[in-house]
Structures are given as C-alpha cells and as structure tokens.
Image (tube, rainbow, N blue to C red; front, top):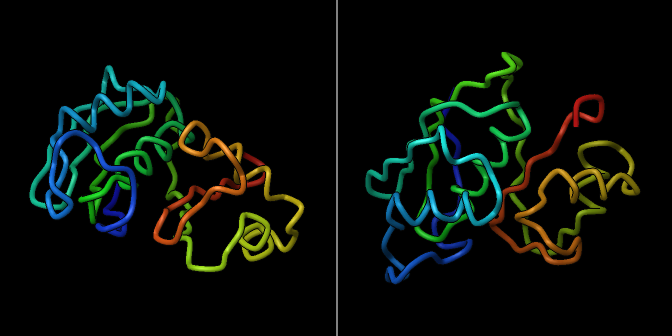
Length: 149
C-alpha cells in the first residue's frame, strides 16, 4: 500500500527502550491490542527505524488507525504497509502531521474548510486520542473523507 513518514523523536514510548532506539515488534503489536485495534491478523517487523506491517484488517478506517498507532511511537520514522483490507475498499489514506500552534479546529479548517468539523478528526483518531485538546507537534493524524469517515 505504501510507505508513510513519521517523526522519529515524537510519540508514545513503548517498553524499556532508550530514546534513540526503535521499539520492538512485540511491543508495537501489544500496543495495537491495548488500543483495541485489530492485531490478530497483523504482523509487524522492525528494521532500524522502519516498521513493516503485513496482514489483513477489516476496513479502511482500521488500516489507517493501525498505521498511525504504529507510526506515532517514539523511535519509528517510517511505516511500510502491506496490509490488505478485507472489505476490498483500500484507498490511499490522508494523514496530517501536527505542527506547533495547530489545533484540531485549525486542521479541520485546512482539510475541510470548516473548523467546526474538528470532532470528525477527533473521532477518527480514537482511541489514540482521548481529548481533542491534546495533540502534539510531530503527531500524525488521520483525516477521513467526510463521506466515508
């Protein structure tokens, strides 16, 4: 499906790795399970600061959530996805990397032309986001199509 860039020094720290190390594949898989995302049919390999995800998920939304959950982990700079979508609806995801000073409102204005749609972005990024006011620079968010969110 593709290779996606992330900010290596930003994100959630997993396990007992040092700040300059990539997380272990089993820690990434556990994080998917802990978030309640589909992990049973997904395999993860870590090669340096790149995570390779293979397998199958149920739909486009789950594909995008798996990619950002893995990518928004400290030590991961790239995510290569070779994940199939069981529903057959796979399309190129739209992601947004948060920059300093941005809010979900500003991001919604940029992508939808209407800041009041910020809750669409928030809901699309749950369970990784638990509060619409808690985003950080370097974090990658999924931007769903308003018709297919």
